[in-house]
Image (cartoon, rainbow, N blue to C red):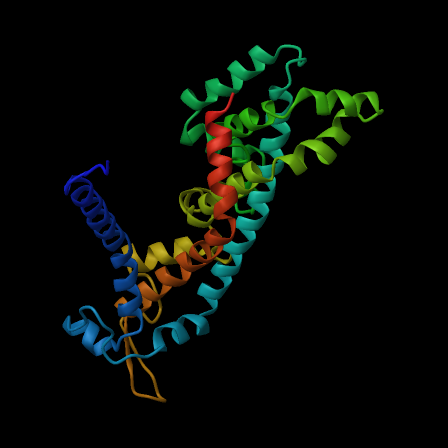
Length: 293
């Protein structure tokens, strides 16, 4: 006999679909609106005439940004900080997580306790600044890259992933004459692509969006990341051509709002472009690293 489920499941599915569409709209509309403002004529933006579609479509705001040496230099700095910082983070996190994942480590419980303790108790901003200053790292890229070399929570996730690698593989490698370093490089890391991809995404996003360490440790404007420039534009309005710029070729007005939203768009685009390519590793790495063990 055919079972009649009634209209209930259809209503439930319809409600879920409507809710998801609303959440997608709420999430994506701010990005869409900023993109629309960035490609609209500054006259319409200043008058508040831009609603859902661009008014006076043009690329002048992006052309203005690409002609600004400070923004281009800061964009390059951000790419450098993100690339080097992520490599340092992955290396330090993996080198800390792997020994703590092995049961034969002497004093494993003590080391684990000391590492986890730093999640709840730390020196604070002023002691960190004094340490960086005493190490002569101020106004250098190392002031940005070395202090956050390891995130303890990410290290715990990676340690959990490493602990689920079968001990038989490692014992067999030892029997074949491999040492710890060779096992780590030849066996553990190739089996850990999902969690490494996840950590790469986490660390890269953190470095890309980070601006507070740069505010504290950097005074040389040539070392500023793009987030500092963006903050100055959005919060303080500090830009040489802040008020308005007229394009000589097309007579299109570029307002401060155009510049502000254009900088925001080019800042978030790289992360949005990279994420789809590592999504499968990202999801698997989070699930395995967080739940197993």
